[in-house]
Length: 101
Image: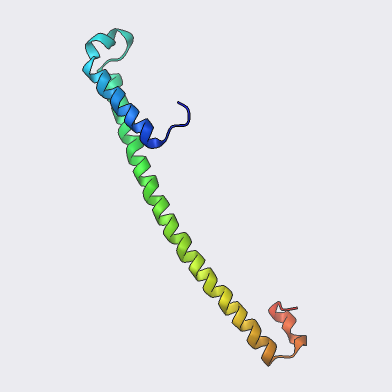
């Protein structure tokens, strides 16, 4: 099919299914019977539902990514503050146990 988007593919499938359904009498001798069209419509519905579910998951992923990045920024700040206090309060010989060189 080439590089078409989901939306383009779904729109194309809808048009083809509607066209097939309206010309079943002429296309039946070529294998385009009611069962074929019903199967295509079922597949179209399944793809549409899966695409909607995927888009919802993408949105949730973006939210989780943002929350993770925010928490990571907070953690980095806490690490930085901890290192400053350790360096001020403890002798440099004990810094190694904190991973500070």
